[in-house]
Image 1 (cartoon, one colour):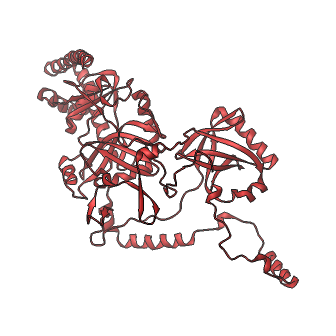
Image 2 (cartoon, chains in turn green, purple; image 1 turned 90 degrees about the vertical axis):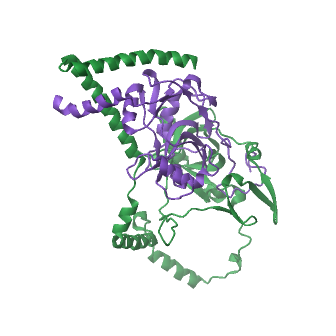
Image 3 (tube, helix red, strand yellow; image 1 turned 180 degrees about the vertical axis):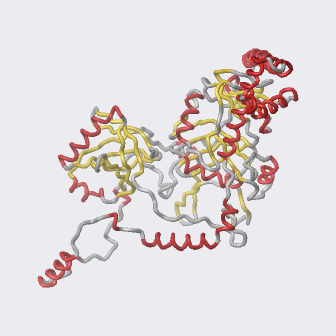
Length: 302
Length: 230
C-alpha cells in the first residue's frame, strides 16, 4: 500500500474535505555512491575549514547569508523560528479559474504532482467537487503548506481522482526578456507555411506514454548489470548485510521460547511427574508474585 | 508574494528552508527499579546496549543527537538511510544507536571502535523506541500508547533502522528472554504516560536483569525437553 506523505483537508467556503496526498511520480534516475577506489568502501564527507586547515564537527557550523560579496550575516535557529509560518494542514482554495486562462497565467510551471485520496467521510464532497470541475472546465487555484513551506498549487480532475500540482510562485518564473526572440521580425511565405503544415500532418499521431522510454537509463542499467555479472563473487560477499530485523527476530524467538518454557513448566507442575522441577517452577512463580507487589510499591515511591 | 513567505532573503536554495524542530531534544531519564515485573500498564523492551540518541529529521536532513558525541552524524553516517523510511517530515525519534557484529548482535567492542574513529567498524543500526515530534508538531503530550502506534505507522522497517519490538504486560517473561540474549537491562514504559523532559518518575523504568543460576539453567533445560513432552 502506498504511503501518504501528507494528510489534511481541502477547504473552500464552509466546505472541508479531508484528503491524503500521495506523490504522483517517482524519480527514475540511477543513484551512485562514491567509493574509495582502493578498497571500494563508502567514503564520508567531512566538513573542512580552509582557514584552520582542519576537519570540524557539524556542531561548529552556522548558517550565513551572503548579503554582499564576501560579507555574511549569521542566521541562527532563533531567527528562523521567529519567521511566521503557517502549519495549518489545509488546501485552501483561493479561486476557481478557467482551464485555459489558468494555463496562460502560469499553471504551466509545475513543480510536483500529487494524487489526492479522500477520507471516507469526505468522499461524496470530493467527487462532487471533481465532477463540477470537470463540467465547468475550471481549475482550482489553492495554497497548501507542504514541508513547512507555503506553496501555490492547482487542483485538476484526473482519472478517478483529483491531481494537485504545486506551482512556482510568479516571482520564481523567469522573464523572457533576456532571450533573443524576434518573432515579429520574421517573414514567412505562404509556400513555406504550406510545407511546414504538410510535414506536421504527416507526423500527426496519438501520444502514447507507454511507447516512450528513458533510453539512457536502460542502456546504463545494461552496463551495470554486465559489470555485476562479472564481479559477482566479491560483491555478494561484501553486500551480505546483517539486518536489524534479524536482531528483532532473535528477540521474538527468545521471548516465545521463554513463553514455551513457562508453559512447559506449568505442565510439569500439573503432572507432578518430576517433583524437583515442579517445585522449582512453582517456587519461581511464587517469586514472581512476590516481585510484582514490591515493584508496584517501588514505582510509587520513585 | 504572500505575507507567509519569508520576509528575509534567506537563500535556503529551494531545499533548505526554516528549521522548526528544536535545536536539541531534552531526554527523558528512566527511573531505576530493583527487578523486572509484570504490569499490564507497561510496555517492555530490551534496554539495547548502545548509545541513547535522538534522530531529528526535517526537510530531508537528519541530525543525530547522541550522548557525549559531538558529531554523531559523521560517526554513524549510514543511519542517514532513516530518512527514506519516514512517512512524514518534521520527526524526532528517541532511540538507541547500536553497532552490530557479523552475527547481527550488538557488539560493545565494535561500538567503541567506531567511536574511536574506525569508520567501517561493524554495522551501525538504530532502534527507535519513542516519538517526540511528528509532522512538525510535538506529540510529547500524547500517551506512550499513542506515540508508539504513530511511531510504528510512520517509520517503515529498514535494514539498519526500525522501531524496536516490545511486549505489553509480561516484563518478567521478556527479562528471561533477554537474559539468554546477554542483554542486562529491561526498559519499561508506562502506556498511559506522556513524554517528559528530565526525570521520568513512573513513566519510564529501567530494571536490571541478573541471570541468576537457579533461574537461567532450568529455563534452558525446559526448552530442550519440550519436543519430547509433546
